[in-house]
Length: 381
Image 1 (cartoon, rainbow, N blue to C red):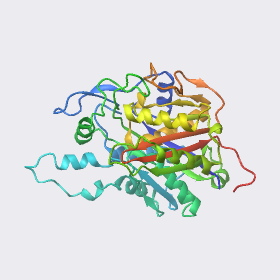
Image 2 (cartoon, rainbow, N blue to C red; image 1 turned 90 degrees about the vertical axis):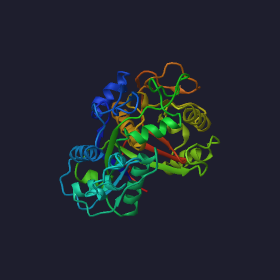
Image 3 (cartoon, one colour; image 1 turned 180 degrees about the horizontal axis):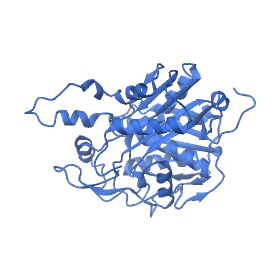
Image 4 (cartoon, one colour; image 1 turned 180 degrees about the vertical axis):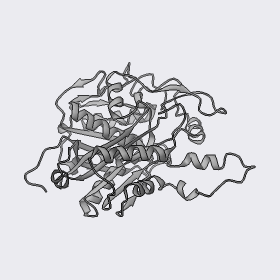
């Protein structure tokens, strides 16, 4: 069964997908110095507007765009919903508890639970199908698309809307990453010798995913095919990664096996590339281990910031754009690489068929997804 993507809804600090892609091609960064909270010092952040987004509003924006882009009409009664987020409505809970001397207004507290983005999406599209709300740290985006693909393959639905939304600019998120020493003070420079940490960013990426048979029957445009995925966990530490990388490597091998691909079949890797010392080192080791013959690699977080749970979905959107334009995005912010990888430094036009998107999250969450240029298979197995 071929599973294809027929609609994209997208927002980053650059704007929609077209604006974001143009900005990446120009090697620009949306990261700016901001002070959204008076009691916290200014930090480099990638904000969509001047103030942090409301996550439900951002969800409605990208979901509506994906539905329109796919050429579908509401309601979509039989459409599955898989919308994830690592922070979800955390900002609303922080506001509720920000002043201990005032009794919080809990009138609408049920609309701020972790699954609220998925429920809001189901209400908007009128779905009566399965609704899932994955939370797998920074691997959430790929997990969400993988769960949608699994639902379609199992026969639970023929179509799903899936992706991840993140509005993580909150005092608690900033304080937490700051306490861990993970935040950058000047900018985001993935795989660079002088990288200093991650930069938080806002984004949402949502896809309409369906069987190729259904897409072709309604004459839908097809952006690409989800070839396969791999999902594993280090089972090692609450936030530190297992530097042995065994589970991370297994996620990539699983993905390749399910996609019926060899390492030499991969034309490009959209890396997690957070610009933190440990992640970039481990990820570069994994890539060098599994792809000894070399493969083009870049991280786009130097442009968009690290959008946490949305980052894998954002990466999938960029892989689809790379296929559409047959162009690789540069590793924004990279000046002096520490690693012996084929890092894309300027936009590179090349023949692209099979792309790999990677995500690695706190708690040892490892996710890999292969996205392919769509070709009709005469024998579908």
